[in-house]
Every structure is written in C-alpha cells, then in structure tokens.
Image 1 (cartoon, protein in one colour):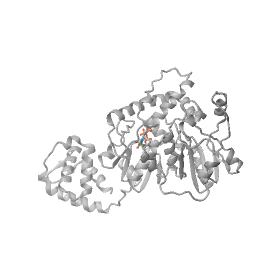
Image 2: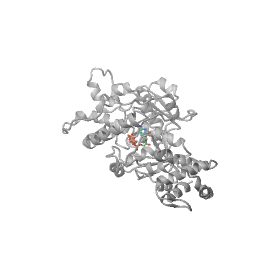
Image 3: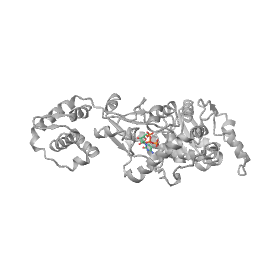
Image 4: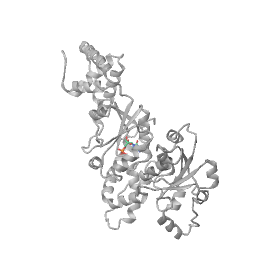
Length: 446
Ligand code: CTP
C-alpha cells in the first residue's frame, strides 16, 4: 500500500478543506489523530495515525484538540483514502534492511534473520565504501567483500548495492518494499540526523532487537588493542574504552535454534570442514561454498576458544565460540555445525557423523608461521597432523582458497590505517555506550 503515506505527505504540505487549512505538519498530525479516532473501522488508517503519533509527535499526543467541527470533511477524506488504497498493490510482505555490514558478525546476521521474519521476501541494501566513509568513517572490509557476505546469507532473497545511508520513501518504493527494518539503536547520518526519521514519521519503519554485546566497533576495538604492539611508529595515546566492561553477547539456546537448519537430516555424500572461522570473511564463505559443492550435506566443525587460542596464541579468537557458530550457521551452504569440534579428525568422528569427505582450503588452519611459533613455546608438545586419518583413508581433499584473505590480513588493514580506525572507534564507541545506558529498552527478539 504505497498510496496512504505518499498521499498523506503531499497533503501535509498544505491541505485545504472547506473549514480548515493545514499549514504545518503538527496541525496535520492533529488532524490525522482525529481521523484515526473517528474511523475505527479503517484499521490501516488507524494504525498509520497511531504510528505517526507515537514516533513523531509527543507534543501533539498531549494537545487533545477537538476537531468535531470537521467531521464531514473527515468523512470525505476517509472515503477517498479507502477507495484509493484498494488500488494499491500490497507489498507488505517485502521487507528492506540496509547496513554497512562491515566485518560480518552474529548481530548483523541476527538483524537479517529477524527482518526476514517480518515478511516473505527480504531485500538487503549494502552501502558503498564511499557512502560509509561519508557517514561513519572508513570500513575495514571493501564493497566486494561486504556484498559477498550478504549474498551468502540464507535469509537474504535480494540484494541492492549502493544503497543510500538515509533511505527515503522513494527509495523504499523503488525496491518495492513497504517497510524498512533496523535495530533499536539510532543510526546517525553525516548531517547529525537520525537516518530513518522520515520513514519513521511515515509509519514505514519496523524496529527489531539489536543484538547485545557484539558490533563492528567492539571488534575493531579488540583489533586495535592487538595492534598496539605494532604501533611503534604511531605516537598517539590509546583512548579505547574498556572493552571488557561492555555487555556480553548472550548465546541463548533459542538463538542457536533459530539460526539452525531445523528438520534437516543428513543425506547423500557428507562433507566435513573444520576451523576457527574467526573474523568471518569472504575467504571462509568461498571455501564453504566449494566444500558444499563436493557433496550433498555440509557439516562444519567450529573449534572452541581454548583450542583456537592454544594454536593461534595472542588474543585469538576475536569472536567467541557461539558468535562463530552463529556466523557459520547463517551461511546458505552450511547444513549442520559441530559446536567445539575436536582439533584432530579422528576415526570415531568420521564414523559418528558418517563423513565421506574431509575438506580444507589451501589457506588452512595449520598456518605455518603460527605452528612455528608454537613449536618454540614450552607447552607445544607435538605437531600431529589433524587430518592424518582422513588422509590415510583417502578421503581428504584440499580446495584452492581463492581469496588470499586471512584473519591476520584483516588485522594488517587496521595497522595500516590505525589512526583512521582509532578515530572512528572513539566516535562509535561513545555512541554505543550511549545506546546501552540511555536508549536501550526491552525489545522482544523475533
Ligand atoms: N545490528 C544489530 N545488532 C548488532 C549490530 C547491528 O541488530 N549488534 C543491526 C543494526 O541495527 C542494523 C544492521 O544490523 O539494522 C546493520 O548495521 P550496520 O549498518 O552494519 O552498522 P551498526 O548498526 O553500526 O552495527 P555495527 O556497529 O556492528 O557496525
């Protein structure tokens, strides 16, 4: 139903009726409230009015004006509204969500999942590098990398690149969606305004629960801490907020259930691939795609935090086990995940899961530089090949990792542009702190 909001907006500029002239928006909203009160049988108009009032006009809400003298005009207006709204195609089932989607994480995937639940078809807008730079600051992942992650997500039906940071009703119409969905935080654009204020005032905005304790900002904060040791050439004081005190991501069983592929049973040739899948990126997704292509059912083993830390050292992993599990589950090539999978692929594991093929990318979890470092450490006992059994059984296969991107490359990007990322981090982390202390209220997760 495109008509009502568009038409009402046109009217709001300067409505002439026999007895009243609406010169400003506030008066127009007053009129709408009255219309909504009179016409209880028109639920579309009633909802529109109450949405407009609740998002836009706290002042108007308490004004309590009496418009009984314009009842007849209201009747005409509503008749007109009813007849025109019937001609409008119903695109309520097409939902739009947009974002930077920089360093994809489980909060992004959970937002996309919830948005999909609001309708039948989900259209995801992706801002360009330039648009992100203008409104938020430098992204870590480039456009191609960010787009690939969205395209691989199982809840995404359509994608739109070069999406504007501040979507307008014309933009929503152009992608044939009635509503835009966004987390309950406020997205501020380069003019210092709420990027969605117009759509909120038009009742075309749906709030979804923002996932606590995870954000690109907090990930970049952790990476900045890790790059401290490499910042010899950079002399600024480190001003990052205390990351440890931020809210924790809550790995509820419901979240894991909602992300999982319900009612799917293993069938045909079962392929297994394992790893840490930390700082989830296009390289991981490409390998998952190729692994799935080698069979019918893909099981992904995700190692626990202690195991990853033992083999990779330093502050790894950046994302915890459950965040990494949800990321992997959001990808359309993945059928099943083993949470905290063993480092070594044993004969028992192969039997338990009926695995026919074990796959690794050529950039594998056995990073030679890391293994070398570990060998020098006291706790490193052996460097047994974790794939010795599948190799011996002739069921091990490597697929070329087409993207030369690894977790350490992402860290290198932060090092290369440390000051820019530091400035962006300082701004965003203040905004995030403000969200948790002042804005956040309970919102039910869909
Ligand atoms: N989002 C969410 N939960 C998070 C982080 C993001 O629900 N923990 C939602 C946002 O509310 C938005 C969408 O994901 O609807 C895309 O967000 P994006 O534009 O990528 O940026 P931010 O909201 O700033 O998220 P981040 O700090 O992680 O970049």
